[in-house]
Length: 346
Image 1 (cartoon, helix red, strand yellow):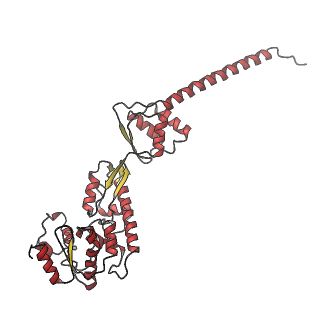
Image 2 (tube, rainbow, N blue to C red):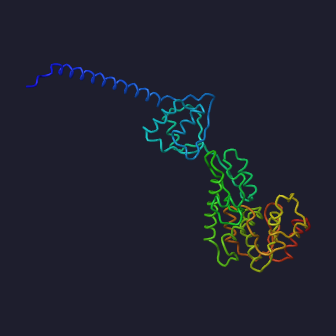
Image 3 (cartoon, rainbow, N blue to C red):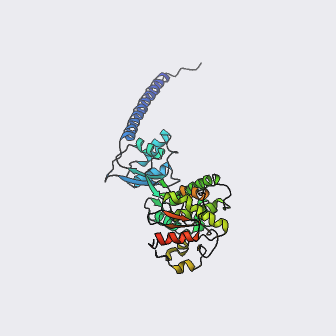
């Protein structure tokens, strides 16, 4: 018959007390850690030196972001920020972009900002009538954009935005575009191109019947000419009518803006007769039909005028000096208008 171990009750009692103390210790540790974590989550990071800005590149993980912000002196204990993000479920939801901190924020507020994509924004305006050279210049000098197109030729830019046109000219809709600071200039161009495609498609769908235009791209090209020729907004449909009438009878467009565009940066602002007589692919005095590409970025009003011209027999127009134009259906009438408005004769 086995003897009972007299030490067993003592050992059990000791083990029980030890487990109890361990439980208390774990509880106290959990309370201490929890209290520290709560204080960390709700204590604002100091913004030494005033407002600060930072950029999170695409593909940045929460750990990478925390380490970056710590290196820039914006946060303390980056590992704890990463743990907090995992506990809140925010670790996989942060968004790339340019951020600004104008006042101290707590870790929880910072995580909310990163997951909401509360990026600092900027704007770029593409002006009606700008050409591609002017758009590129505006992009290049904008300090809030990342200049990914620097060093890219036109063919590479067209490929990057998914455009199939032979030239970037005319492809970007004039508007004001909002973007997160340090966004790629390619993203802005892509949005402007998509906007132009949408507006051009709408204008082409609503076009008048029996136009001498074979494609939306031809409409875009004509719209760019209308945009550059128009001084008074109300004249757009009549100016379009003149060009449509000329195309119908095989008459050359004879429009100065195309000649100027063909001269490029060599044009000094003074259009001379020799320029009108010098042949280039864009000289509508020496060549028939539309030029090979648009010559500017037309707005919606020019697109609609190109696809819905006024009904008229006008073949000529001349600037009246007040921004508007005088329209004529015969050369004799046009010459008389030129003498009246351009040469000052009665």
